[in-house]
Image (cartoon, rainbow, N blue to C red):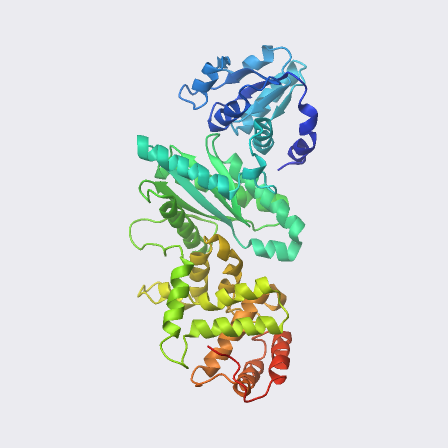
Length: 481
């Protein structure tokens, strides 16, 4: 988002004179939404609508409201008293051409397009715009993405209309935050968001899915068209790096198309998201769509897994499942570190589910690398809203404090604290798995073994847990089931 578009947010209250006169360029979905939400508002007058596509979505409503429709947007140059020209096409070349015409004629009417235009039509619409907008990038948020996705599925089932979705993830964005700071990271995210929007048509919807991930819905789009749009996004982001001083900058893009890749939102999101993961797995900065063959893992239902962990652990009195013990160890380590209750609750679930990705690795697929189980586990959990807090713990629980772990080779305080806790709990149980009971004496001995592996775990964490253990009798059972 440019400085000028940032200014839109500050000046919105100032551009609401009674009888505001607007000319709109673009009759797609954005225009239709605007017309629907300002019907009956006497403070706003639409002087005309320019659209060359006779099938554009907004045209029937515009005719119903008596709004003049033109094929040539340059008709606005002959209109007196136009307060604002709103460009909803996403075509910046058109906008620049119009500015040149206006300059030649000495006209100074304000033109808004891009993210600024989308922001303004949302404010004019007055209908829960902020509730469906990401405040950092100005794109739609994940809730609006899913609302649009369901609408397209309904339309596709009724009329047989194809559409595509894109999932996009900024490659190595964490490195930008770590090296340049979060302010620069936010600037990069805004620029990536604008690059995505400028690569789409006016009828397409771009959203920030969360963090450094973006998504888009492309109505009336087949496979070839979706791949072209995805490649356009990839190239635009790649060119951003040098201009922002953060080269290399790139995105991995996953593509899924209705109805070829699925007819439900879960199927489409799962395949687009997994395709994006495959693009990253192949080195990033590429576009990928899954063809026939291996299915992606199902999104995870935590209730089923916790039930499974409990059943496996109930088989006998002493030998509990690895996941259940790691869960209990994680809770005790978290308490020793003085973590708050909310964090300890997350550690309980993260310990239970830390190896869930091994279900896919162990399924007999020859192309899986064992070390990918952390990535797969995080992928399986990420779409469960109330489990997003444990995703970093699962993803990074095999990182080492010295930077020699996987999957990212993070080191020191780069590793999320929860992931370090689960890592330590995992190591302790592997050292004690053949013990009939877990007593303080045995835990202290296992902790010494972990400490000998210099660089494996944060020394401060080991020290804090040792103090708790040493405060208890050595023959005391540390865990009870």
